[in-house]
Image (cartoon, rainbow, N blue to C red; front, side, top):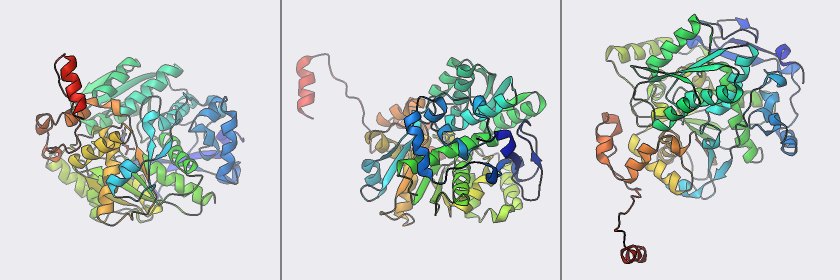
Length: 465
Ligand SMILES: *Cc1c(COP(=O)(O)O)cnc(C)c1O
């Protein structure tokens, strides 16, 4: 492979901003389009395989850590890192599985719904796909400290990479009381310095961006374009799972919109490289109480060749601030009012002829129970994908015969509270929340049954099953 430093460069996403930076620079600040940097490669200088099937060769060399990684075995498609600098902990051992139990629930024909279960990553969420790439870049620039704001999974992921690699120390910023306990436990256990801000995720992100600009701390939120490079690999594995066939739909929950942005970039590049002949459609699913993207989308906001209507966005956020509207959903991983990757997500929606919709917390938790009963534990945010398919089926947007892939973004044990409360039909637990989380019905609850410590009574109970 050609030395990576020769072949890649960063640039701003904004078409009116021609700035480019070399790979050794630490995430320079740019203006325009949300201040987002984008990674562009000069593909003419990369040795990319002539067909995706060639990546299968790496299955037989799995003892090599880079070939074992579900991200780096596709390294020619994210060729920014010199191989000896890559920080990997074996992320991306995740699989695509057909699941008729969830498929039937969503209204799909038998055999047409697939789940890409990203909960199997080392820290239990898809975030590891991105963090291996961000950690690699942090190492390339010699960072001593790395930081992120998090609804929980980003901090768990950054903390695990820092603790395994011992290359840098980690500071994580979380909103107070907004983090699922399993995720907080991970940050603490993996020895990250954890700062709880008296505010929500949007507040925490704003602070951490300022802190990283000020001090020499490397920022690992999904504004970091290298993270998104790693997350492209989720799509490579989906294609791999389908024998390199392109599905009809990719359905993903939308929070900060890093994943959807990365997926769009993956397909944009694969198409450009002639490695696929068509792109799937992308459906991004918001939670009703955290639906900035959906509202702007329904108001007509589009990528528009890199010139989306910034007035529309400005007005939206202006109103949001004036009314002090905050995002609220039980799916805490997607409880985000100001999605930082909004612009990139618009590009992804353009590339993938995509669409956006929203689902209620009730729909999310019902879908989650079905996904679980079908053998896949996931956290609430992940279930927005299947709930979204059900909705898009009902509206006739997705056909029952389409081949649909839902991304299950995080592991069930991240947020057991919500699961137990649902299965115990604990309406009170949900009632204290905002109007957007009116979870009042528990049609798929599977409550534990209490019985006396008595053999006969226990047998009676079992006989009645
Ligand atoms: C981070 C996260 C999301 C949201 O992904 P974005 O890339 O921010 O849109 C969804 N689900 C889970 C479990 C997450 O951790």
